[in-house]
Image (cartoon, rainbow, N blue to C red):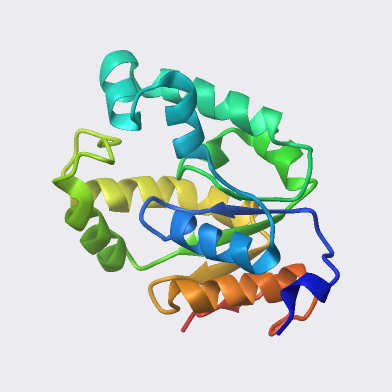
Length: 193
């Protein structure tokens, strides 16, 4: 299918969801399909501050990271077409999120707690994802998801379960939504049992 000839009906796609749900992977694939630039908010924050998220959080704490994240979301509220993969907690910046959402299709990528736990355990040894709480990994995932799920639900236009659908299929579903060649009506869950 020739993606360049499709008419885009929105100017931006914002991917949200808990860590390890595939926002960066799906985002890169989606950007390639649409011919749009891709930006990962965590990677952009790292580029701007010259440190990894883990280093920034260790040195200055989560509030410093969240302030940089909020500033970036505010900057990205308007502009040219873009696929944006946000950090898992970006949705907590309610005002910035509302502005960002006005120009974008917001897709909540989610997965079962067991899938998230497995994915996080695989990268834990690399030190890429600093802990959000003092709890163990399984408790942290459950607790943080319980607090954020209402925000993800309220702040998104549709949901895709990346624990069921692979990244390529998820990107294809989102591209169809963006180009109005919908496989399911906007607002329904994709890949959910």
